[in-house]
Length: 457
Image (tube, rainbow, N blue to C red; front, side, top):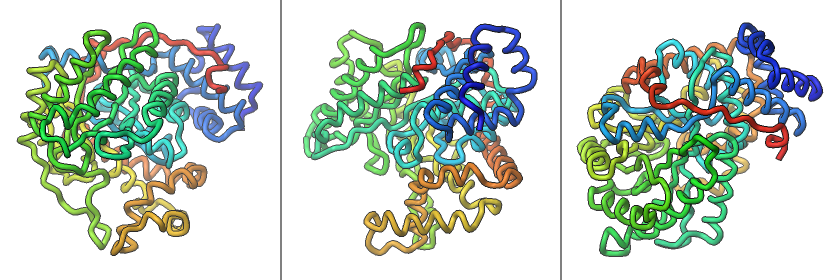
């Protein structure tokens, strides 16, 4: 553990001395000292956490590893200035976040990737025990550790409204989402996906009436997010028209949402840059009784039409696909062919980590025992143990976070190697290799200094 007083002194030196930054740049950032610093940021006492997070933020600001909004890049794609010849991977990291992120940034650096997003959903923040502040800090530390320099696109994924009834949000749900947006933006998440698709009322006959609760709350939350923007940053906001796992989205629904949203916006604030749709996938995939994943049929033709409509009629960057990480390898290239802007990837990396031969068997068994003892009420009738554990083991990341971070260093290095190979495959399939220069021609994140007290709240 690094003492709080030491962290504070180092932080002051970083803020006032370019020489100190040069020293860090040449050694400390890519050494085990960074590993110790991020451990403190995650597991120290409150004062130690605050100091370590502040230092990592400020070092990043100094050397050019800064949270950024992808908005300008997406606007350029919507205008046709950036070709729709690649699909941006948006990656959720639920557990062993520092190691997984290190494996990702090692490939980002090696392959010249600039078009990528790192995100965490509202629900994931809860069950993985990762606040926006911690998540942002860990990802910035991993970028520094692997020698990455450039904008880091950090996203609040599925900031989702829970429904009480068709078209009606639960009590105080919007208030909770507003508070979450404040927390996320304050932490450096300058990209937010607002998911009020849960409020779509399919009991209504017209698409415009079905989408009304969705676009109305989305517009209100968009305006709220815009009021929080740091100077020089336009947050990239996304909406959603079809809940993942539901029926496939249609052009009529997309147009109804966008026209309603634009009417509610009334030109008072900057609108959306993208729109998520449903084309046949589900979060985590459909689990068969033996624990394997059922193959699904993605409607790429619908995805292609919706992306084209979003770009040409509403100047959006395109359509976004959720729940794609467990699809067969041969399908990833098809997202590019369909003109998909962005796909969200999560469970596949969790599976690779937890099922890795170097992940301690006794720790995995402890996690499954915890699931059995604490989540039995979420077990569905007829589920096998394999199905139950597969669907709910994600919720064991939080209770076992420290133990997972403490796995033997050689085992973690082997897991990082496997993850890096997977990231490299996906980056190649999605055709985002050598996009760094293109991205940085549109995105130049401003310096945003923060006070130590900002991390103490």
